[in-house]
Image 1: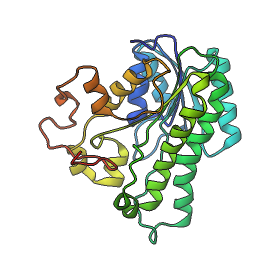
Image 2: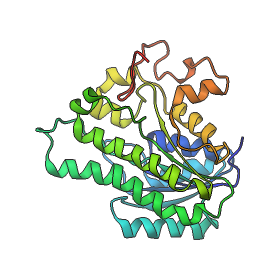
Image 3: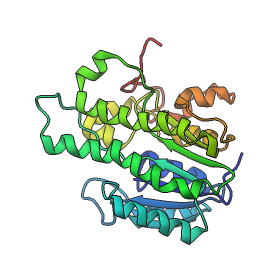
Length: 275
């Protein structure tokens, strides 16, 4: 199970889960294209595409930082082509870029509504589509999207309809393309955390320090993604939770993933705590 020599195009990987996935692949010796907007340091958020590239190369991989806004279709096409030319192809696409806004239907500003749809659903579609011609040439082609299972629960939609639409839209892209490109042997799968993950999104948009304390480290998502990406491309069309993926390969002790050892964990949004 190794990604040595594989080329991975990942959106929004300058920090958090995306960076953790990139670093896990880098330890195998993968080529990582970090395509994100973070070219300049943010006053509150750590990391840029350039600091991420440095970490990737220090971990044993090769890195190509590309400044990219996934809402720009022409820029997406150009970034994917640049990545393929630089590394000689693309084997894996990871749709990690995402925006969060949990406002209700009446409270959300229209510009915020448009933003999360454009980044989440539309961005996932544009990046996946742009990568397909190059993925067809790979013998281990994968597209992995960080989006939830398509569980049609009215209460989840009602709680934050705009955001739910955007994230389920990402999952629908995965669901449809898995079947559409099955004949091309390109795997499309979706991965979602069973618990909240200690990222900037959790700290600033969901629950602050208390939620961070009850979260797991991004490394659990990275390890689960690694398992999926090492599978045969015939493994496609699946909606997976990180803990379930790792349990399937024999892991039973998850204590090392806790952001704060021994803390009670918070079940993530779109995950049924009773299931």
